[in-house]
Image (tube, rainbow, N blue to C red; front, side):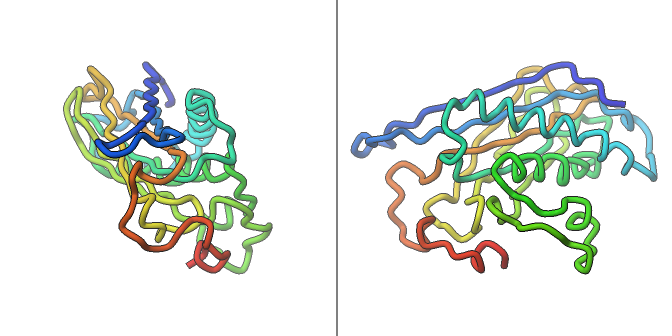
Length: 213
């Protein structure tokens, strides 16, 4: 069911946005895996089995993206995910990425909870210490033609309210997705927008409570 045709990686270093040159550039990266959509051209009522099959894909992509960005893991400050579904698929096929993509990055960055219990919504069975990467991974998805662009949102890994780290990265895989494909995307960055200056919560002031609400 999992047939990967291409993996596309994009990394950028932002030195300034027409203001003073930053002492350390902002590093933003995204990775997109182009997969065959096994449900293309038909309505399949039970698509959940594919979600579990995507777990190792998410883990591999998260590690590949971190390696491509070439920064220490502790410097990763924001994350996001997305999907572009080819025209013969439906938007819900992109939603299969919510758990495999999101938890792959959270676990890479130090989240230590029980994934199965959390994703099943069984509060009474949740075990382990959340650790790092407490915040929900923001997401977006669309149905689009080959070469379609997707703006993937980025927010702080421990609290979604760090205003200076609200961001998005445009992702486009040339020639993909074909009508019977899906592009699954992960994105991360090292933090604040270059020249961020609109106030709000700072990452250094995050408490555990901020990340959990």
